[in-house]
Length: 209
Image (cartoon, rainbow, N blue to C red):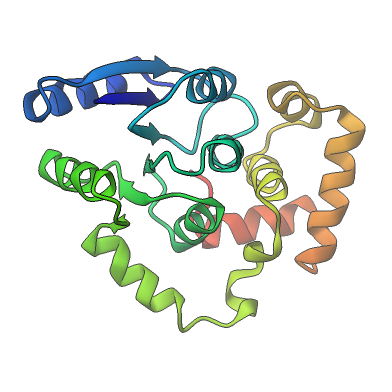
């Protein structure tokens, strides 16, 4: 069995590998520490499972997920993220995730999630499932960010975090003009007017740290 671990923190990859090796002693592992490495590794060869973080340097884990799902749709992708909010969970499953696990979960839950997705099923932890149930009763006005594309969502989060246009453009490999265009689209779709409005919304919905 071959597992690709994509996370920008070396310690996290090491911990995941240690946990999984104890349960899957014959597993082989690959690693990626940013979005481009994750895409390159995922598409260069076949993997039985990709474990992917959403928040990595580059265009964002959701963009990586989209590319993997488009070109290797049969490869299961388990999202393991610090973001446990329903906006992230809904967006990840819509983009092609097979499972979603909060980084606050236990090692037992990680093993359970891996076994579930490897068997061809979807996985979501009980805690996240409860949030999912709540989300199903929300109106579109309650989750304005769901109107955004994954790229727009990532730009919105970075703007709300206070990153400059130049920083966002460099990290996402886009031009400053492109970021400005995305910003205008985001404000229009979310019926907002300023970066402060985006920041307020992102903080209230725990989309930024």
